[in-house]
Length: 281
Image 1 (cartoon, rainbow, N blue to C red):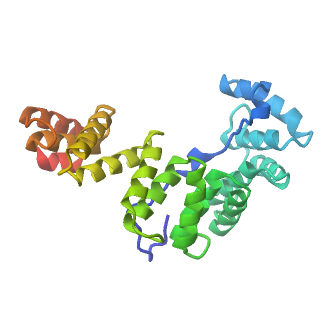
Image 2 (image 1 turned 90 degrees about the vertical axis):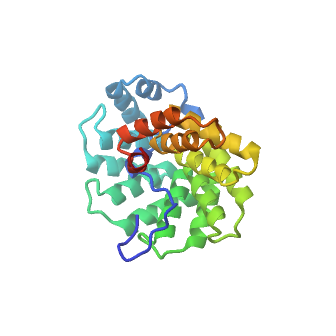
Image 3 (image 1 turned 180 degrees about the vertical axis):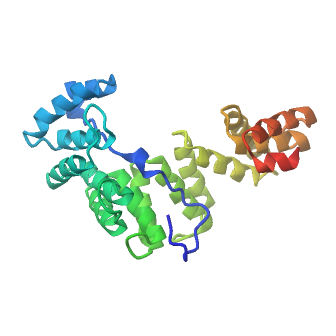
């Protein structure tokens, strides 16, 4: 997410915005029929229930109805109606709807793509406490998309989202600590954040954590942690982890040297198109 004239940081994680569309179920709505219908995949029934509540000015239902129109689930896909319902919910103060409006403008759903407008909505959402909004305004601040580039502001927004346990924000914050960007370099702080993101299954955090431990291979405990991480990730299908595990077996680092085992993991990674694996076979 950067202009072509800017230098991209190699470590900030960008997420496909479409995966972040917010269809929320607050505690007060946990037993609501509309939300139960969504959970069961009965989107038409859900849309009917959300419409009843939305017309009564219920902001959660307005947001959720907008999400269904945007995705075309249970109702015909209609970007204009989606935006209209998101706007109603946002005007009623719902942070998640503000985030969804940012999505609309960033992706150009039924409107001309407008990064500045998207950034304004993400910032409103962030200031209202939405962790996804905080993460995305952090990305926009970091890369200067729709706003001036400000890595210090980005750091603060990532911090707020990380405090709300958002794995992607924890990963980005960890990388800023690791590289000493907008903060004093602190590997221990980075590891703590990576641990939290990894506990949520954040693969980039797990790989980075493994590489960090591996960089301290003279410490048997950290080397063992690295091997265990790469073993689990490799078994889960990560090509990057398979390459590393294959090389560890090939050179006998942290494990007994075993060329066949090394070749096995490198071949698996190669079959996934890994150039690094192909070079080492």
